[in-house]
Picture 1 (cartoon, helix red, strand yellow):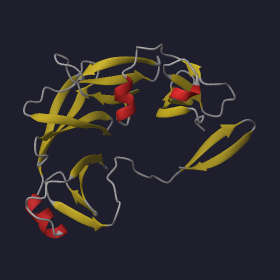
Picture 2 (picture 1 turned 180 degrees about the vertical axis):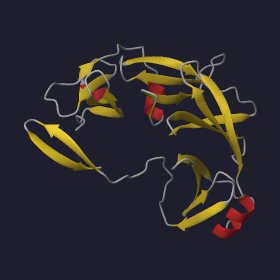
Picture 3 (picture 1 turned 135 degrees about the horizontal axis):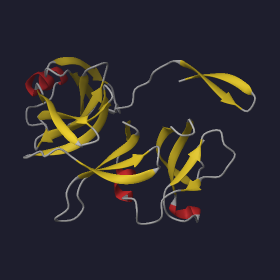
Length: 236
């Protein structure tokens, strides 16, 4: 369990020790030294500081969710100052250090979400009106070479008709979600959630108050874990 005076940033498996660890950051009122800490799950040891102040872009890791892929936790960093480039912040889960990674060169669109698909890191980019989506994948992770995968046009007229929305209603939110070998696009309107496939076809609509799109998916399985001298089966 993450201590109450810390903020959860991500969870990963540390290859050298085969431990599951969480990356955390102390709350302002905690009175701890600023920086990132690591906590091993099941350990009685206190969180261990790994990064000194000033070495982590806090506005990035606090503002977006991390994506675990290719041995690292990843956050997309939008440039904060003029002259800066958009970058991806990477936390190496083996060395437990931070670095930056280049993003694909995308003109006239806005890079937005990161995701993991078929063992590769992916990124979605939207046009200014969020009516179309370009998908990029990092096929050569070591060389940071991005490859364009596909272009998705949202069927807005069909979506509007299905949800009873006006054509001038532009208050929607779009999230790209990885599935079994393909991608799904979730479009959020007030009280509506719409699913679109990679071909830009409307798959399903869901009408419910307060529903929100997310990349998180539930998967039920039984996994053995050893804690102390007892073996437990944990349902995930």
